[in-house]
Image 1 (cartoon, one colour):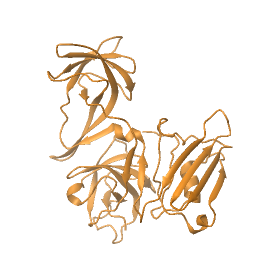
Image 2 (cartoon, helix red, strand yellow; image 1 turned 180 degrees about the horizontal axis):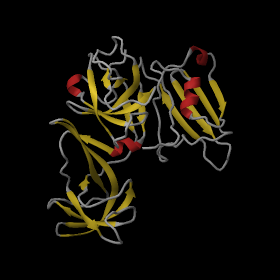
Image 3 (cartoon, rainbow, N blue to C red; image 1 turned 120 degrees about the horizontal axis):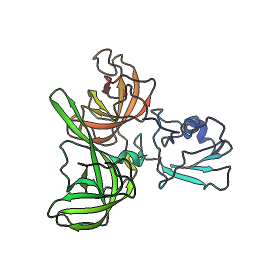
Image 4 (cartoon, helix red, strand yellow; image 1 turned 45 degrees about the vertical axis):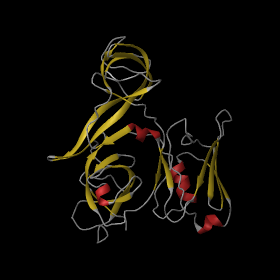
Length: 321
């Protein structure tokens, strides 16, 4: 999946040079991104981006243009980043961050990733999409109506979620988890027997026959506390969302490590080339980093937050030394 400009703002300890003052003003030039600006003025132990948002309802500060001013201001443990647009018709964007003790920091992950659901067992849902009610074609989008066969005990609420099953993460006969994607949010219109007619009020992808009705699941930014696993671990990437040929920044991957190995949501891990099965830290070169978005018992869904080079799909996963 191709992505536009990334917004990334670091929230770790400021460098000694930065601490000598309390404000930096950067005038954006062609080719600048907030990722690059934050790396130029802020220093982090891991040297990787920690905060971004691509949702307009959150901040949408990733759209910066030549002539815009980015002001980074800090006071004690607090950091404020303000984007002042050159074009006065655009709004000023402000992000306020607070540093937490040690290397652990709370990070905000774009709402688009909360739309990917990773579970260890198939979802049954409270209903199944039967068909599109109006217009031509099999796929329903924003504004379309759909018919949904619901369970007898289902009572329509103000809003609910429609999700599509996208993949099964497995290796041989081992099934690690099931991947679903929020396709739409819908509102009930009428109900006759066990058939509910609903109108799509938000669309992330096409809704089609067989999609599941779920409880309302808000598409909001994921707030995670970053931490390192306490135990030494070694695992593998077992799947990549969207099935790209290579793995790169902001790809979602699935690994054969989970809570049973000491991982939790927010765990940070390293990516290593699969040229040998040596334990990370014993000569292996870390080629990238992962942030765990959802940890199940024996597997996890994680986001690639850094990669030095495009990585093959058969990379190793382990501790960051």
